[in-house]
Length: 108
Image (cartoon, rainbow, N blue to C red):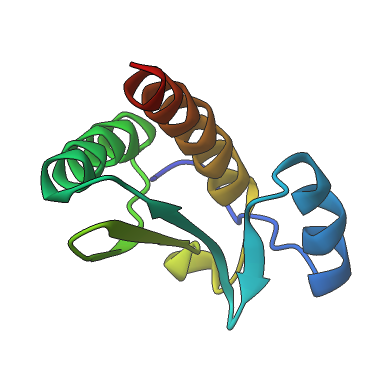
């Protein structure tokens, strides 16, 4: 986003330390990655749309790989050339929202 100045990127060690609060996420090939399993295509697409809305609200956009019953999220801050606070904030928001939805759907 304009006006932010230079974004601080985290070292691999710092990233791994910060991921302790997001245990289902991992750091791999320059990305924070999380994979979700769903019951069906409809659930997968609903999650894609939910995450897309969160990403727009944060003005930070993940790469997503979409399958019939799987969704893979990959976060990095391209303009900073690494992982920044923006990635951790969005990962945390995604995790909280998706966990809540999946728990609600799967408990029915």
